[in-house]
Length: 317
Length: 317
Image 1 (tube, rainbow over the protein chains, first blue to last red):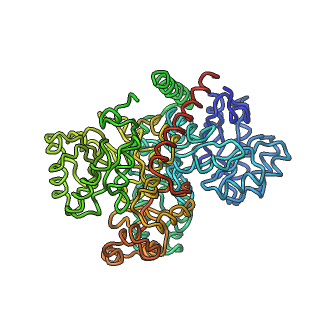
Image 2: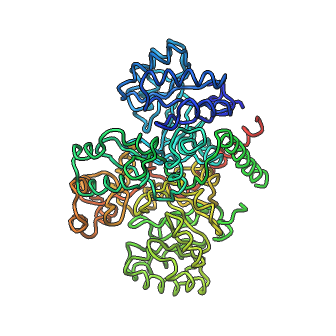
């Protein structure tokens, strides 16, 4: 496939598995890379030692390229970067912070660097910092999300208008139709989160996977906007958040309710009542646990079908 | 063009101009219909007498099909329906209410009936009521909007999975790329709001058009969720709304602030401070006042270019 994202990472398909706390360890990353996409170890929930262990296990499990996602506001960001340089991981996705901090250093070390953005301002900052590509993430995506609430449909043409590097679309990526639609709107590749979050190789708890499968439309919400906006399932914990927010609770009150380890409790330990169950809007359309290979195959097949459909229509027109 | 929406309305292109309060009178509707799309008179801001006047003027200004949009929760809905039946308007778009109320009566009178939905529940209700097509409107759309906050990217495959009638995509419709992406995601036609709201034939105030053109990303917000969710520009009036909402204001307090005639003040009278400036997220990418003809031409040209691009890639692959 002659595609700038596939070429950049030397992978078969321009499909990236999003780095997701408590979901994307070495097992998921290796499975996605082995299936022809790009697997990312999500370091956001890991200690530096644990990240090292995951990198080594991932190297043992795949000979294909894989990467690490590093949320820059995370306290271990610096240590994580030393760890991945030590083990010569050559693909780094950074998010939630200033792309200027580490990009040139990582580039000098021979890494391909991608930064996740949700608006034009950070897209420009990331390009100024010298990134190789950007992930443009829409409002419908799960987990932490931009304050502008710009949807994938509106964000892609906006970023395409200024982009000097390839764009990877994130938010709402269901299957090959989403992939082709993202291409039409200006992206060259896609990042898939929710569907991989509940796949067989995801380290998330079976309770969490079942809750996502049971979710219907309107069952996720972007909330905690006074702190850092995050999209999650509307479980009991969410109801508490909503009640406080509707009553005009302060940042401090919300921080106290949030406490520590809510996403670990929900996603890794499967506490559906008190846990924070981060997931995207597209969860409404997910209905089974698949393997990473099945997901990649389905994206590739439905993409080809969608493209054939349009080409056929084109021949008719 | 061999397309179910074009065939349904006997129009050249499956491009609908959304019915918009204070923007889409006879002048805009006739201009869009004359350009090969489907113009809709937005009756939401009209008295029954005024609607009659607009229907008569629209008939005088175009020999092409046009329609009327009727928000069903509006007090004059029943009178409006009598008016359009009297003048044999054969295309009716209903919204914001129960599609079962008037659909069969309108169908019996020979009308094509379309209902605007933002979720599966109302899509099913509309199809049960016998509509000819549905408008699926995403979170990024301007004005009144669904509570589920489902974006166009997520809504379309969701509705496509259950639709037994053609789908018209709304929310985020910038140009022919949006149109083609909407088709890829399962729509057969599109409804364009914001871009027509600020076109030459729109009856909106020049101040409003200028404010929309000046708007950047993140400058609109869905708010008033305790009443009826509505997307608007973040002007002074919005800041007042936000302040009250963040402080946990009650429905009653918000109703009092909203008062009456806020959208008229903003959109028709051009009061950018105290008016309610309804518009979609895509306003961030709008940068000029065009004629309806120029807008339709641009959609058609950029759609063809986007399709050629994909077909060309397809030949390469």
